[in-house]
Length: 318
Image (cartoon, rainbow, N blue to C red; front, side, top):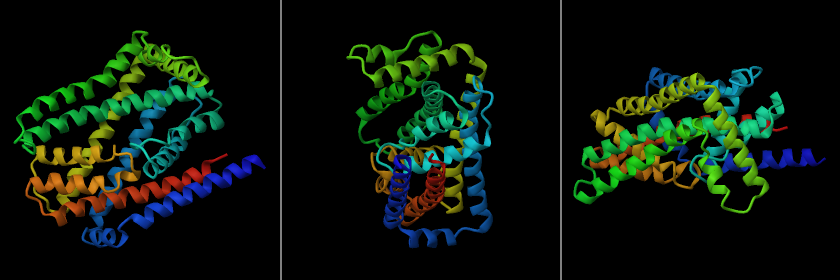
Protein backbone atom coordinates (compact mmCIF):
# COMPACT_ATOMS: atom_id res chain seq x y z
CA UNK A 1 0.00 0.00 0.00
CA UNK A 2 2.82 2.38 0.84
CA UNK A 3 4.57 1.74 -2.50
CA UNK A 4 1.29 2.22 -4.36
CA UNK A 5 0.65 5.49 -2.54
CA UNK A 6 4.15 6.78 -3.32
CA UNK A 7 3.74 5.73 -6.96
CA UNK A 8 0.45 7.64 -7.27
CA UNK A 9 1.94 10.66 -5.50
CA UNK A 10 4.89 10.66 -7.87
CA UNK A 11 2.63 10.45 -10.93
CA UNK A 12 0.48 13.32 -9.65
CA UNK A 13 3.59 15.43 -9.09
CA UNK A 14 4.84 14.75 -12.61
CA UNK A 15 1.41 15.52 -14.05
CA UNK A 16 1.31 18.80 -12.12
CA UNK A 17 4.75 19.78 -13.42
CA UNK A 18 3.72 19.05 -17.00
CA UNK A 19 0.47 20.98 -16.59
CA UNK A 20 2.31 23.96 -15.13
CA UNK A 21 4.80 23.96 -17.99
CA UNK A 22 2.15 23.74 -20.71
CA UNK A 23 -0.02 26.35 -19.01
CA UNK A 24 2.80 28.89 -18.91
CA UNK A 25 4.28 28.06 -22.32
CA UNK A 26 3.34 30.23 -25.34
CA UNK A 27 2.03 27.28 -27.31
CA UNK A 28 0.32 29.37 -30.04
CA UNK A 29 3.46 31.40 -30.66
CA UNK A 30 5.58 28.24 -30.68
CA UNK A 31 3.33 26.66 -33.28
CA UNK A 32 3.42 29.80 -35.45
CA UNK A 33 7.23 29.81 -35.35
CA UNK A 34 7.52 26.12 -36.17
CA UNK A 35 5.23 26.58 -39.16
CA UNK A 36 7.83 28.91 -40.65
CA UNK A 37 10.35 26.09 -40.74
CA UNK A 38 10.54 23.55 -43.52
CA UNK A 39 9.98 19.90 -42.74
CA UNK A 40 13.61 18.97 -43.36
CA UNK A 41 14.73 21.71 -40.97
CA UNK A 42 12.54 20.34 -38.18
CA UNK A 43 13.83 16.85 -38.96
CA UNK A 44 17.44 18.11 -38.80
CA UNK A 45 16.86 19.71 -35.39
CA UNK A 46 15.22 16.54 -34.09
CA UNK A 47 18.08 14.48 -35.48
CA UNK A 48 20.84 16.51 -33.84
CA UNK A 49 18.98 16.39 -30.51
CA UNK A 50 18.66 12.63 -30.79
CA UNK A 51 22.41 12.50 -31.40
CA UNK A 52 23.11 14.68 -28.36
CA UNK A 53 21.10 12.44 -26.04
CA UNK A 54 22.71 9.35 -27.56
CA UNK A 55 26.16 10.81 -26.75
CA UNK A 56 25.17 11.91 -23.23
CA UNK A 57 23.90 8.40 -22.53
CA UNK A 58 27.03 6.87 -24.07
CA UNK A 59 29.16 8.88 -21.63
CA UNK A 60 27.25 7.53 -18.62
CA UNK A 61 27.24 4.01 -20.10
CA UNK A 62 31.03 4.01 -20.57
CA UNK A 63 31.45 5.04 -16.94
CA UNK A 64 28.97 2.45 -15.66
CA UNK A 65 30.19 -0.41 -17.86
CA UNK A 66 33.75 -0.01 -16.59
CA UNK A 67 32.77 -1.91 -13.44
CA UNK A 68 29.27 -3.22 -14.23
CA UNK A 69 29.39 -5.08 -17.54
CA UNK A 70 25.80 -6.28 -17.21
CA UNK A 71 24.32 -2.81 -17.80
CA UNK A 72 22.97 -2.39 -21.38
CA UNK A 73 22.98 0.88 -23.32
CA UNK A 74 19.47 1.49 -24.65
CA UNK A 75 17.57 1.30 -21.32
CA UNK A 76 19.89 4.01 -20.01
CA UNK A 77 18.87 6.23 -22.94
CA UNK A 78 15.29 6.29 -21.66
CA UNK A 79 16.57 7.08 -18.16
CA UNK A 80 18.56 10.05 -19.45
CA UNK A 81 15.51 11.51 -21.19
CA UNK A 82 13.51 11.03 -17.98
CA UNK A 83 16.26 12.80 -16.02
CA UNK A 84 16.00 15.79 -18.35
CA UNK A 85 12.22 15.89 -17.99
CA UNK A 86 12.33 15.99 -14.20
CA UNK A 87 15.24 18.46 -14.09
CA UNK A 88 13.71 20.81 -16.66
CA UNK A 89 10.38 21.21 -14.89
CA UNK A 90 11.67 21.55 -11.33
CA UNK A 91 13.30 24.39 -9.44
CA UNK A 92 17.06 24.64 -9.68
CA UNK A 93 19.79 25.03 -12.27
CA UNK A 94 18.85 22.07 -14.48
CA UNK A 95 19.34 19.44 -11.80
CA UNK A 96 16.90 17.29 -9.87
CA UNK A 97 16.50 14.18 -12.00
CA UNK A 98 19.80 12.56 -11.08
CA UNK A 99 18.25 10.31 -8.39
CA UNK A 100 16.47 8.53 -11.25
CA UNK A 101 19.88 7.47 -12.56
CA UNK A 102 20.81 6.05 -9.17
CA UNK A 103 17.48 4.26 -8.75
CA UNK A 104 17.66 2.74 -12.24
CA UNK A 105 21.10 1.25 -11.60
CA UNK A 106 20.08 0.05 -8.14
CA UNK A 107 16.69 -1.50 -8.94
CA UNK A 108 17.33 -2.82 -12.43
CA UNK A 109 20.95 -3.96 -12.28
CA UNK A 110 21.70 -4.48 -8.60
CA UNK A 111 24.36 -1.81 -8.06
CA UNK A 112 24.61 -0.47 -4.54
CA UNK A 113 23.38 3.06 -3.95
CA UNK A 114 26.91 4.23 -3.26
CA UNK A 115 28.37 2.73 -6.44
CA UNK A 116 25.44 3.96 -8.54
CA UNK A 117 25.88 7.44 -7.10
CA UNK A 118 29.58 7.31 -7.94
CA UNK A 119 28.75 6.77 -11.62
CA UNK A 120 26.42 9.78 -11.53
CA UNK A 121 29.13 11.87 -9.83
CA UNK A 122 31.60 11.01 -12.59
CA UNK A 123 28.94 11.58 -15.24
CA UNK A 124 28.23 15.06 -13.86
CA UNK A 125 31.92 15.92 -13.51
CA UNK A 126 32.55 15.10 -17.16
CA UNK A 127 29.40 16.95 -18.20
CA UNK A 128 30.57 20.04 -16.33
CA UNK A 129 34.06 19.63 -17.77
CA UNK A 130 32.83 19.79 -21.37
CA UNK A 131 30.20 22.45 -20.73
CA UNK A 132 32.61 24.67 -18.82
CA UNK A 133 35.21 24.44 -21.59
CA UNK A 134 32.57 25.68 -24.02
CA UNK A 135 31.40 28.20 -21.47
CA UNK A 136 34.92 29.60 -21.28
CA UNK A 137 34.98 29.92 -25.07
CA UNK A 138 31.54 31.51 -24.91
CA UNK A 139 32.56 34.04 -22.27
CA UNK A 140 35.59 34.98 -24.34
CA UNK A 141 33.21 35.41 -27.29
CA UNK A 142 30.95 37.63 -25.16
CA UNK A 143 33.89 39.86 -24.28
CA UNK A 144 35.21 39.82 -27.83
CA UNK A 145 31.79 40.69 -29.24
CA UNK A 146 31.89 43.92 -27.23
CA UNK A 147 28.55 43.53 -25.46
CA UNK A 148 30.03 45.06 -22.31
CA UNK A 149 32.75 47.12 -23.97
CA UNK A 150 31.73 50.27 -22.12
CA UNK A 151 32.99 48.81 -18.86
CA UNK A 152 36.73 48.09 -19.09
CA UNK A 153 36.89 46.56 -15.61
CA UNK A 154 34.43 43.89 -16.64
CA UNK A 155 36.97 42.31 -18.97
CA UNK A 156 39.34 41.64 -16.06
CA UNK A 157 36.50 40.31 -13.90
CA UNK A 158 35.31 38.22 -16.81
CA UNK A 159 38.73 36.67 -17.34
CA UNK A 160 39.01 35.84 -13.64
CA UNK A 161 35.57 34.23 -13.77
CA UNK A 162 36.59 32.20 -16.81
CA UNK A 163 39.67 30.87 -15.02
CA UNK A 164 37.65 29.89 -11.95
CA UNK A 165 34.88 28.25 -13.96
CA UNK A 166 37.16 26.25 -16.22
CA UNK A 167 39.64 25.15 -13.56
CA UNK A 168 37.28 23.36 -11.17
CA UNK A 169 36.16 20.24 -13.16
CA UNK A 170 39.61 19.21 -14.48
CA UNK A 171 41.21 20.04 -11.13
CA UNK A 172 38.67 17.88 -9.29
CA UNK A 173 39.20 14.97 -11.67
CA UNK A 174 42.99 15.32 -11.38
CA UNK A 175 42.77 15.34 -7.59
CA UNK A 176 40.58 12.23 -7.65
CA UNK A 177 43.08 10.46 -9.89
CA UNK A 178 45.83 11.26 -7.39
CA UNK A 179 43.82 9.96 -4.45
CA UNK A 180 42.77 13.37 -3.14
CA UNK A 181 39.12 13.95 -2.23
CA UNK A 182 38.27 17.66 -1.94
CA UNK A 183 34.58 17.26 -1.08
CA UNK A 184 35.38 14.67 1.59
CA UNK A 185 38.03 16.98 3.05
CA UNK A 186 35.49 19.78 3.35
CA UNK A 187 32.81 17.55 4.86
CA UNK A 188 35.20 16.19 7.48
CA UNK A 189 35.26 19.63 9.08
CA UNK A 190 31.59 19.25 10.01
CA UNK A 191 29.92 16.64 12.24
CA UNK A 192 29.46 13.29 10.51
CA UNK A 193 25.97 12.45 9.31
CA UNK A 194 24.58 9.60 7.27
CA UNK A 195 24.36 11.87 4.23
CA UNK A 196 27.93 13.15 4.58
CA UNK A 197 29.27 9.58 4.93
CA UNK A 198 27.34 8.61 1.80
CA UNK A 199 28.76 11.56 -0.17
CA UNK A 200 32.29 10.81 1.04
CA UNK A 201 31.98 7.15 0.03
CA UNK A 202 30.60 8.10 -3.39
CA UNK A 203 33.44 10.52 -4.05
CA UNK A 204 35.98 7.87 -3.06
CA UNK A 205 34.44 5.41 -5.51
CA UNK A 206 34.56 8.09 -8.20
CA UNK A 207 38.22 8.53 -7.36
CA UNK A 208 38.81 4.78 -7.70
CA UNK A 209 37.25 4.98 -11.16
CA UNK A 210 39.70 7.72 -12.17
CA UNK A 211 42.60 5.64 -10.89
CA UNK A 212 41.59 2.27 -12.36
CA UNK A 213 39.88 3.19 -15.62
CA UNK A 214 41.81 6.10 -17.13
CA UNK A 215 41.16 4.95 -20.72
CA UNK A 216 37.42 4.86 -20.07
CA UNK A 217 37.71 8.28 -18.44
CA UNK A 218 39.31 9.73 -21.56
CA UNK A 219 36.71 8.06 -23.79
CA UNK A 220 33.82 9.40 -21.70
CA UNK A 221 35.36 12.88 -21.63
CA UNK A 222 35.71 12.85 -25.42
CA UNK A 223 32.10 11.80 -25.84
CA UNK A 224 31.04 14.53 -23.42
CA UNK A 225 32.86 17.15 -25.48
CA UNK A 226 31.16 15.92 -28.65
CA UNK A 227 27.76 16.23 -26.98
CA UNK A 228 28.55 19.79 -25.88
CA UNK A 229 29.68 20.68 -29.40
CA UNK A 230 26.41 19.24 -30.66
CA UNK A 231 24.47 21.68 -28.46
CA UNK A 232 26.39 24.61 -29.91
CA UNK A 233 25.91 23.21 -33.41
CA UNK A 234 22.17 23.04 -32.84
CA UNK A 235 22.12 26.75 -31.93
CA UNK A 236 24.01 27.54 -35.15
CA UNK A 237 21.31 25.62 -37.05
CA UNK A 238 18.45 27.47 -35.33
CA UNK A 239 19.86 30.91 -36.12
CA UNK A 240 20.60 29.83 -39.68
CA UNK A 241 17.08 28.49 -40.23
CA UNK A 242 15.61 31.78 -38.97
CA UNK A 243 17.97 33.67 -41.32
CA UNK A 244 19.73 35.50 -38.47
CA UNK A 245 23.11 36.64 -39.74
CA UNK A 246 25.80 36.37 -37.06
CA UNK A 247 29.48 35.57 -37.13
CA UNK A 248 30.87 32.63 -35.17
CA UNK A 249 31.85 34.67 -32.10
CA UNK A 250 28.43 36.32 -31.91
CA UNK A 251 26.61 33.01 -32.28
CA UNK A 252 28.67 31.39 -29.54
CA UNK A 253 28.13 34.44 -27.32
CA UNK A 254 24.34 34.23 -27.83
CA UNK A 255 24.38 30.48 -27.09
CA UNK A 256 26.37 31.13 -23.92
CA UNK A 257 23.80 33.67 -22.73
CA UNK A 258 21.05 31.10 -23.26
CA UNK A 259 23.01 28.38 -21.47
CA UNK A 260 23.59 30.66 -18.48
CA UNK A 261 19.87 31.50 -18.41
CA UNK A 262 19.10 27.88 -17.55
CA UNK A 263 21.16 28.23 -14.37
CA UNK A 264 18.48 30.52 -12.96
CA UNK A 265 16.62 28.61 -10.18
CA UNK A 266 13.33 28.56 -12.07
CA UNK A 267 11.82 25.70 -14.09
CA UNK A 268 13.23 25.77 -17.61
CA UNK A 269 14.82 29.17 -17.05
CA UNK A 270 11.40 30.65 -17.76
CA UNK A 271 11.74 34.35 -18.54
CA UNK A 272 15.53 34.33 -18.17
CA UNK A 273 16.04 32.57 -21.51
CA UNK A 274 13.84 35.03 -23.35
CA UNK A 275 15.51 38.02 -21.69
CA UNK A 276 19.01 36.72 -22.46
CA UNK A 277 18.30 36.22 -26.15
CA UNK A 278 16.54 39.56 -26.63
CA UNK A 279 19.38 41.36 -24.87
CA UNK A 280 22.36 39.65 -26.51
CA UNK A 281 20.92 39.30 -30.01
CA UNK A 282 19.60 42.85 -29.75
CA UNK A 283 23.15 44.01 -29.04
CA UNK A 284 24.10 42.43 -32.38
CA UNK A 285 21.35 44.30 -34.20
CA UNK A 286 18.89 41.38 -34.38
CA UNK A 287 15.23 42.30 -34.12
CA UNK A 288 13.42 41.30 -30.92
CA UNK A 289 10.92 39.26 -32.95
CA UNK A 290 13.72 37.13 -34.38
CA UNK A 291 15.29 36.70 -30.93
CA UNK A 292 11.95 35.54 -29.55
CA UNK A 293 11.72 33.14 -32.49
CA UNK A 294 14.95 31.50 -31.33
CA UNK A 295 13.59 31.05 -27.81
CA UNK A 296 10.32 29.63 -29.11
CA UNK A 297 12.15 26.91 -31.04
CA UNK A 298 14.22 26.11 -27.94
CA UNK A 299 11.01 25.97 -25.87
CA UNK A 300 9.38 23.65 -28.40
CA UNK A 301 12.35 21.30 -28.23
CA UNK A 302 12.51 21.28 -24.44
CA UNK A 303 8.76 20.85 -23.95
CA UNK A 304 8.71 17.90 -26.35
CA UNK A 305 11.72 16.12 -24.85
CA UNK A 306 10.77 17.12 -21.30
CA UNK A 307 7.21 15.86 -21.74
CA UNK A 308 8.47 12.53 -23.05
CA UNK A 309 10.88 12.45 -20.14
CA UNK A 310 8.11 12.94 -17.59
CA UNK A 311 6.11 10.12 -19.16
CA UNK A 312 9.14 7.84 -19.00
CA UNK A 313 9.79 8.91 -15.39
CA UNK A 314 6.21 8.01 -14.47
CA UNK A 315 6.45 4.58 -16.11
CA UNK A 316 9.87 3.85 -14.63
CA UNK A 317 8.94 4.34 -10.95
CA UNK A 318 8.91 1.09 -8.96
